[in-house]
Length: 320
Ligand SMILES: Cc1cc2nc3c(=O)[nH]c(=O)nc-3n(C[C@H](O)[C@H](O)[C@H](O)COP(=O)(O)O)c2cc1C
Image (spheres, rainbow, N blue to C red):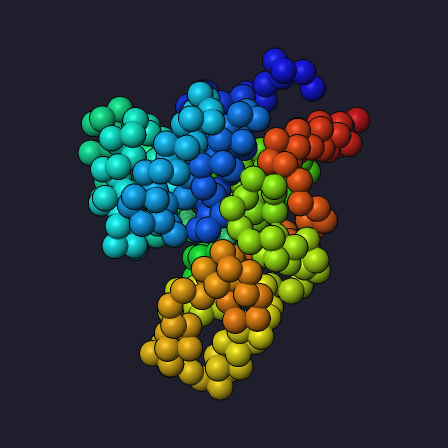
């Protein structure tokens, strides 16, 4: 791989990036430092607004812009109370790539498109992908059941969801959920995606703003240690720890939505991801944690993905 290497797809053309690799917006993880590191390495870095008060969000966007002059975006889960302020701040700071999740694509897309921005919506079903296309989105992220963090209640796996979404829309599709290396990048492109969005793998990087204990929890996680929980409240994939086991027991004994919301309380994700409290917090990680064995710089993750991608493609047999 040289400085001039490209892996060109409809997504790289749309966003002006070298490689079709997007670093996911992640609460308590994706500040300006991580986003800039990914953009500098040729992917697309996203500053994740989710855990940030408006002033912190503005600071982190400014930081990212100071650290890179490459394309850069933001991620906003629309169910938070600050979403309107985040949109206004991002526009003031000159951001023109918006990844939206957890809300209607019709809410901000027309206004952002009018201002010349690119808008990408995270979806968990082909139906939601069609709605996003109709609302004017430029691309969708098809996020499967394997993914870390909040997830669709539908439980459709990435392998099944991506081709369904590819068939349903004509805009570029970005595969997400379970992608941590170049083999999965190759598989995603083979399924018809134009790129990948990578979460958990980038959470375990040196530039990730997560607590060191959280990063180490990803590295030491083994196969089969995550579960999609709290479906009655808001589905989220968590690493099994004392808190997750408490939720599982409550769910098994028929706890109501209200009981579960009370057990969850507030600030659980912050406790695990930001404060490193691995017993009481929500350890939001994907199934792919079972494949991640080190904490390394984000640029190394991207370079390794490209090398593995090439090797994976070469391994494919030809029909003779
Ligand atoms: C710690 C963590 C926090 C997340 N926070 C957000 C968020 O704020 N907004 C969002 O749209 N998705 C969020 N997600 C989901 C990711 O954006 C991404 O789609 C997902 O991690 C992809 O699956 P993977 O973890 O298997 O790579 C989060 C995921 C993780 C692991």
